[in-house]
Image (cartoon, rainbow over all chains, first blue to last red; front, side, top):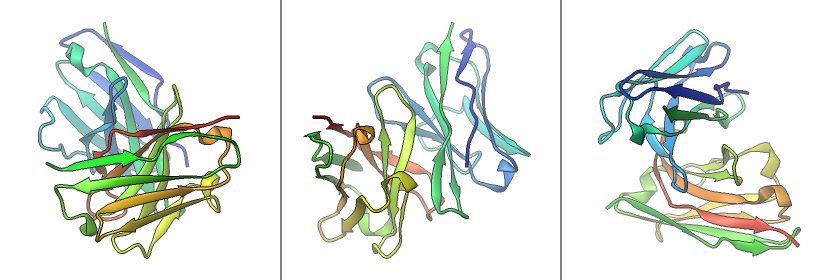
Length: 107
Length: 120
């Protein structure tokens, strides 16, 4: 089971970043998203496709449709620069699967 | 404060063993699935294993099946990962994390990680 993410995404500050996570019929699964800054543990930013944990800014949102799940970061700030990973549970193999990660650069 | 603290990492020779521990505090440990995730230097996240609340269900990534064992002691609020027959490719930072809801839930609380280096 493979989750496909673009290796990198670059956006100017104040613009919108969209990070995709692709898999055939991913809409049938719950997708979770993590942010990881250098030298730090990952932080959950979106769970069950669209839910946002407490403390995560409203600028972070998620969607999941067809073969693509998307993490959207509005009004991007320098502090959003990080690696972002999508994750699902594959019930047929009983495995957790992570995407390869996307490095977000704020220009 | 909800917290997970890993320990037990270090340098080990190929073929050797290590036991990682993860101490939980600030929440009802016995109510949650728990998981181990690793990250090799400069690489992405890789799930290693999951364990159900009472330890009856366990799942592993194929590359560690038969070599690693996940376990827990709810009385001690601790999660463990026994790693045997270690290989160079097992070198990574190992994180423990709490799973929200059921087995398909997100990993909402993470420890700071413990480094495992397998080298002669």
